Length: 439
Image 1 (cartoon, rainbow, N blue to C red):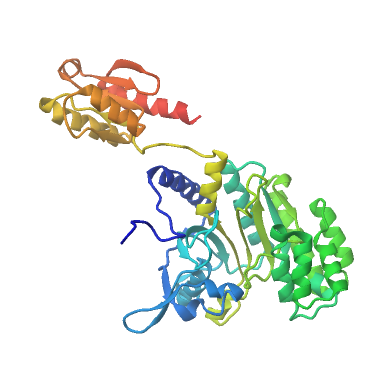
Image 2: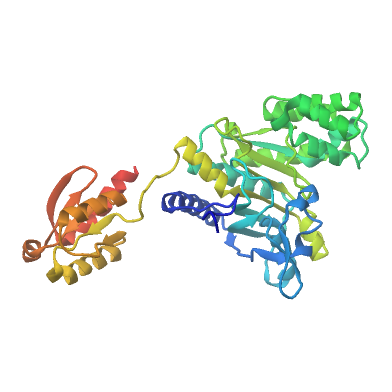
């Protein structure tokens, strides 16, 4: 190779980045398991036909290839279609409703951009087998809980329903077939604005009057109750839209009962979500501090799993994009910024005391203190500098005097303080210092 580099659109994640990413994943995992969700893992490679025909226009982004046996395969596009396959394949082993979470990489052959990559990691949560609006509300509540736990400021979750957009298209005089073009155009609203969406609608064959009516309706704004009341009045003659409005009201009532702050969500008729498999409520989170698009999103997709299972299995879920969350948290200086996983660095006084230092390191690890140990004895100043360069807060010294007194010298490299402590008290001191630091 002329140049040593990674593939464009696929990133290496060095230790400091990985520690923040692992913090995000562990936070999402804790929240998921607190709600009773169960883990699932699927392969990153599927048969090509498993993915094909499920993604609409985005199907062109699938990475396809043939293996040595001539089998047509594809890299996982997202975690949703594999979930549909698993639900059908293991129907006899799963108890519905099934709450599942999954974490791993997916691949899309698109143009890389800020916050958008060809290899990206997602953390998905889904409730399979329930049509209840309580399921939608739980997913939205978990979205808000997760962004709050990660420290995101001023975020809001936008909610809409695909049949509200469909109703807007129908009352504007469009056929059912033409409604698909409305979804695609409205999905670009925040990127290209009113004029851009109007042009998209006109290019899709929507006449000027209908385009203006659609744009008027999708821009209805106000509190959730005000927006739903306005939509109910304007879409009163469309039965499916009326049912969709009632569905959103139920979801909002459940969010209120769950204690989700009302400033964390609102109804947005312009929200479409581009993937073709959504059938009901859709939602995505935004923040004014990230102008590049939504932080994450999801919705209800009641038909997708049925394509595999041969029967209707209603499902709702969302995907946290770990790469995007990581990038935004870096930009906004959110979350912890450890430089290392270790808290303590046990020095080696000399070759005669290596065994004693190894025993001390083992004691600390047994007490739950992440501990590094030097690999070469002697020159304590050099060892202190190594510990400091690595970002380890405490350096410990165990020499002949300390062994004789059953003590350990603890040097706080952040504060420049040093003291001798009884050996039995060292783990407690370090744990207490970490607790104070975390507050």
